Length: 389
Image 1 (tube, rainbow, N blue to C red):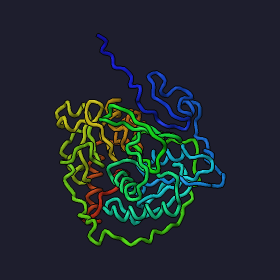
Image 2 (cartoon, rainbow, N blue to C red):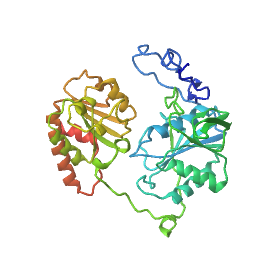
Image 3 (cartoon, rainbow, N blue to C red):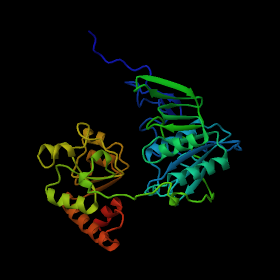
């Protein structure tokens, strides 16, 4: 009996600048596959051309909530989908709910509309729906793209489609200029249809790396709709803060993680409590009995997607790097500047873990005291840098 697992012939593609691509064993990363230069072929990034300079005749709208002034990976993928599908006479308009401080042009947007009054921490779905409908009425896009997530955008896209009876495709795992596709029947079948009015994209259906840029024009557009959330239609109960230690690592947005280089576990736990961060650990630290198995991060432990991940005394074995591949900002504290984790980290602090933990705890406690106990959590990168001064 042959027990070899067969390749799913219905497995989705990923849309890239070169078109739809399947990841096939043995060719991923080969020269020319992704449309980007092979490693070592260029030592500096070349300027990217504008996607189009033609007069726009139609609009592709992308709507997403910002998180602390930036778009997350899922939202950037939705924006890249619109930019890759758009032809020379289509304009990509990005509507951001919340404050946005990023580079809209680099992400592929031709126009940026920012609605800073929509804080992601405030639940106002009816107001957001009215703003989205007003923007669509003003720009009349042929298609609307949104990330199909659980933090507001997926719900908003469904609310809009239901309100105006628009054609919609949800949890889209495959897309190009002519069709979308998704799994159905408990992922046992694959369904495809023409490009609908509203497209809600699943994660990783699109490669967000673009070989071009957009115009990036910031547009002043005012939403003058009257807020209705205060009238009792929806009541925001606020955000309930809980002890970070009670939070599952898969759900944590802020994680401090210890490796073999952390000798004082009590001091490390005090730092996590001061910062309001969840605690993680490497496999070596767990095997040594310093932490329980549910704290292990890596291929044989938990895979995390934190916005901030600070690794103390972790060398960065390939299994551990696999567990943090989806983290937005990685900060590594290590005495070895050539440790593998330094290649993954956005910021590497070459210092003793114990001394850094003590300095960071003191700096964080002082800053929190100055801002008040009710203040938001501190920016971890700034605190880490300040602790070294």
